[in-house]
Amino acid sequence: MGMVNIIKSAAGKIEPPKRVLSFLLALFLVLPFLQPVKVYAFDPDTDCRSKGIYMVNLDTNTVVYERSANERMYPASLTKIMTAIVALENCSDLQETATSPAYIYNEFYGINVSHANIQAGETLTMENLLYAMLMQSANEAAKIVADHVGGGSIEDFVEMMNQKAKAIGANNTHFVNPHGLFDEEQYTTPYDMYLITKYAMELDGFMDMVTTLSKDIGPTNLKDSLPIVNRISPMQSNSPYYYAPIQGIKTGTLEESGRCFVSKASKDGYNYLLVLMNAPYLDEEGKVIETNYSFTEAKDLFEWAFEVYKVKTLVQFNQVYSSVKVKLGKDADSVNAVAGDNFTSLVMDEIEVSSMQPLTELPEEIEAPVQKGQELGYLRVMLAGEQIGTVPLVAAEDIEADPVLVYLEKIKGVFQKFWFKLVFLTIIIFLVLYATVMIIRNYNKKRYAKTRNKARGGTAVNRTKSAGSGKKKRKR
Image 1 (tube, rainbow, N blue to C red):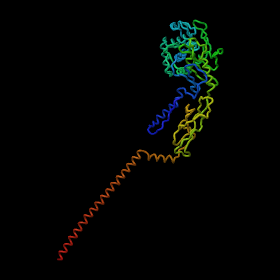
Image 2 (cartoon, rainbow, N blue to C red; image 1 turned 180 degrees about the vertical axis):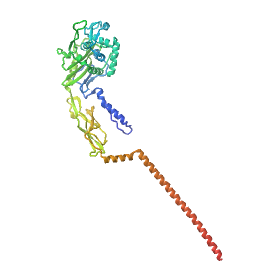
Image 3 (spheres, rainbow, N blue to C red; image 1 turned 30 degrees about the vertical axis):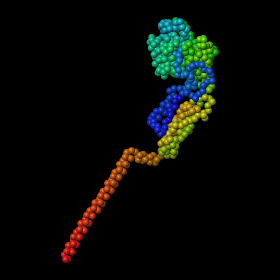
C-alpha cells in the first residue's frame, strides 16, 4: 500500500500548502477502502504451478498472496462470470423465457465444447440458462443468454460486457465472446478477474447458482427433464479433489489458457477469494495432464492461509499514544492523544501484537478549548517497516479555555494585526515629523531672535558714540 509522506519545510525546499497536505491525508485514509491492501506476508510453503495467482481475505480486504497479478492471460470459461453479471443486471425478471436460435450452434460444430444439451428451438427461463452456464459451463447457454439480452445481437451483448468491465475497474480485460472459447483478443488478468468475481458475488442469486451441486432445469418445451451437474470437483464429496471449505465459483480450461479456477473458501470465520490462472493442462508431449493442478493448488493455498493468518487487534480503542501541548488551557497545558477506534488486521499468527510499531502524526500545539473525542491527528500502524493502516488519534478529555489568557491573547492579536501596525507606524512617523518640524522651528526662532538682538545692540552703541562725540565738542 502506498504511503503519504508528510513533507516538512527545509532549507532549499518549498513547504506545500496545508490544503494539499490535508487532501493527501484524506486520500490516504480512503485508499484502503478502494482497493485490496497488501499484508506483511511471506510466500506459501507449497509449490504453485499456476502462472497467475491473486488471493484476498474477504473479511479484511487484504491481499495475502499474488503472482503475475497484472499480466494478461486467456480467461477461458471464467468469461461466463462477466456474462452472468450483464445478464443479472439487465433482466428484471429471471423467469422470463428465451428460445435458443439455431445460428448460435454454428461455431460449435466439429469441436468438443462444454454444453448442457440444450437444443435449437428449446425454451428455458433466464434463471435456468444461467444455472446451466455457471454450473455446467454450458457454452450454448451463454450464447442464448447473450442473444436474448443483446436483443438478438451477441456483438451488442459483448460490448455491454466490455463496458461493464471498465466500470468495475477491470482495465486490462477485453471480451470478444460471451462463453470464453479461445480468441487472441479475449484476455484478462488475475487481478481483474478478482474484481469481476467480487462484483458478481454481490449480485442477488449469483452465489446460489455457483454453489448448487446439481439441478434439473427441465421440463422444457422439448424435454421432460434436463439435469445439470456442477463441474467444480472440490465441491463434490465423492471427488478426490473434495475440499469442504470451497464454495464455487467457476472453472475454465483451454489449451491456450491452461486450467483456470476462481474459488471462494470459508473456514473458522475466515473467508478467502482465490483466482488461479494458467495452471498446467498439457504436458511437453501435448497430452492432457491427469492431475488438475488448479484444484490441488486451491486447496493448498486455502489451507496455508487458514493456518498462517489470523485477525488480531493491533490498536485498542482509547489507548494513550502521545500528548499534545494545549495553548490557553484553563487547568491543563497538554492533552492525551488516544486511539479513536480499534484497529484489527490480518497478520501472521506468529506475530505478537507488541511487535507493532506505532508512529504518531500530531501537531506540536493546539488551542483551547478542546473537546473530548476531537480529532488531533492519526497513528500510523507499522509492521516490519511496512505501514498496514492508520487510526485517528483523538483528545482524551475536555479542556476549557482560560478567559484571562484568551483576553490577553486577543489583545496580543490586535497588536499583531496589520492595520494596527500600519496605524501605529503612521503615528510614529507623524510624531517624528512633528518633532523634527518643532526642532527646526525652535532652532530658527532662536536664531532669528539672536540675529535681531545683535542688530538692536549695534544701533544702541552707535547712538552712544555719537552722543559722546557731541559732548566733547561742546566743552571745547
